[in-house]
Length: 269
Image (cartoon, rainbow, N blue to C red; front, side, top):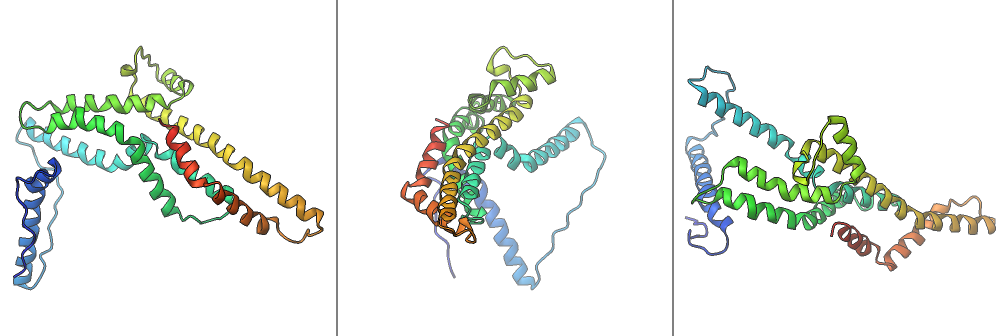
């Protein structure tokens, strides 16, 4: 018989390993037991899922059901929330502008641009989410004297608000607050309902400003190439055939990707 690698609960690697041994390992054992039972019976049992509304026995049942429904709703919106409250929007738009300015169409592929944007976003957001982990998640998950869920959410909002306010134009935030009739004396009083769209609008504005500066040198190269071809009488040759290698050569010699990544990261420092 084959035996998997043995792991002890006293492994000092990290707290994540302990949580995996506490919660993930029993779930894996249950899955393996179900697979073994399916092999013995010769067929894989199909799960039977039923969704219905039954009468609750008390207020606690109704409250628990509403909490589960709210949790599923938040999980479905989690990708959009993470994208719109981080640096991802600006980074992916700037990288898209670079590809368009170079004129390389689908090179780099969209998957590469999105993947690079995600990892640059992780790099930018690491200090913010480290504060959320230390101030909110760790006190909420500890076994002795844990804080309440509401307190954990309140602590987690602080670093996220601080990051978004730092990179939000005041005019965009004031516009949305005036439309909702809000007034905020301090940063803590700013509601996320107004802050998140203001942050997204500011990120779009900043990304398009950066895109303009990216396009200017490449347009100059296109104009120079078109003028040279016109002067040589080669009007039938498309300028893009000559300008594309020239733009690629200049971009590579200038170490464009590193300079661009450095500029993006310094913009969030």
